[in-house]
Length: 557
Ligand code: NAD
Image 1: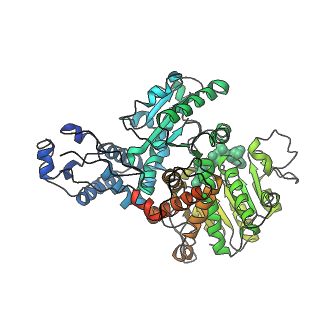
Image 2: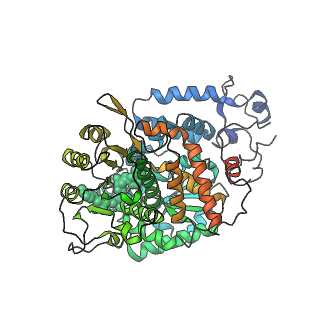
Image 3: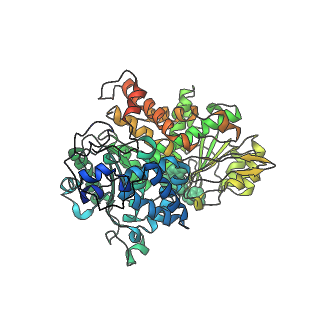
């Protein structure tokens, strides 16, 4: 009569304690709502606590879908889905997985941006942990308050650079919550293994600090030693309390993001999705685009708008991939150019360059604008990661189309309102020749009677598989070669049907298969590099697939 062990994820936890009555109904990992069978209602002592009709999971999902679709605004759908997740995780994930293209924009970008802005007023009940500067000296103790034992995956933010929305402080919690939902939906990480964390170190956002509804610390963001010591204590506490966990750094401001990745990547199993995940998904898009232009990485010249985490992360991985094609590091770097808020990144520009920009500050005359830079550099690809909308102007796109038969134009800034150009503009201004991808979804566009389907260069294609692969192999580190393997695997999964409509990513409906393939490639790389602590199963893919969480109800009795 025990409810079953939690469905297996990465390893079995064993039987949870006997739970009955309201305790079953209020535990979202155990609750089946109206789908509890007649016998379960009797044995678990919940008869009368539910309406009499017994529904199947399929019927529940149809009912739920009608409710979601009935909400007029995306943010209301987000709130509804969050409440469903807090009530019944199996039903939530079944709905998200079966309607992935409709649900991902609701539980993640672009709606999650709006959700973060309103997090203070839509926050209902705990999902994840807030750890603030006040908890200094006690972080390990506080992590032990988390009710699930074997946490394996933590997504953590300090809220400084939430999507393209800037410093939202504690309101950034929507991001780790959303990312972890994607881990479960896309790669089958059991929800019970996932822990979203927001580190509240203050905020520079004056409107939040002076507003009445802000839920975080009302103080300026900590910097310097106070910040570093807090992070150090947090990392040590994670290692102590959840020694097998993978830590994903998420939406940190760019100076901290690079530093933290660099300082901790060999000390705790960790990666930064904004830098490394973005890099892999964008590189996969470029490799996919080359299947349309029928050229090689070696022949590309990339011009980035924005030299932050995303841009330089993509360039670094491009360099690794081009080296694998035979270029030297210097030759590969010479194919990556950047325009940031101060103009073309060149040596002797006159300002002090951040460390991550230095390898791309080439010997070249300065150009003040992107338009000028496009004209003098003649790039094959334009990659927008500036967070600044409408910066790929008609003049720029038209010039790219004059320079290239199939110009690669990726407007990756999120959310949709921040995209450097829209799909309609990219296709329209290039006579339908652009190979376009964006960070947030755009609808297909028809130009001269031809349908173009924009690819969404969404990190969702990469990080769930990378995380799963690193976890099943019990890798000691997440390496750049793992991200390269992930990018190559993703690009190899773009089918002829995708390329026929100009799409450089597979359909999201294949996301579980994509994540499985990436997890397998990543785990394989962990074994190859001698980083895996788990023994290598004979059939790696089958082993990983068997561990993936499936949203199906177990029979409790
Ligand atoms: P960041 O703050 O680290 O970097 C932004 C860079 O853009 C800086 O170099 C800044 O100087 C530059 N910039 C800003 N405005 C500019 C302008 N008008 N002209 C030229 N340069 C300008 O941010 P990030 O983490 O690199 O993210 C940048 C954008 O990329 C965000 O909008 C984010 O949503 C998006 N992004 C997309 C994906 C994806 O689609 N998969 C992944 C990660 C980030």
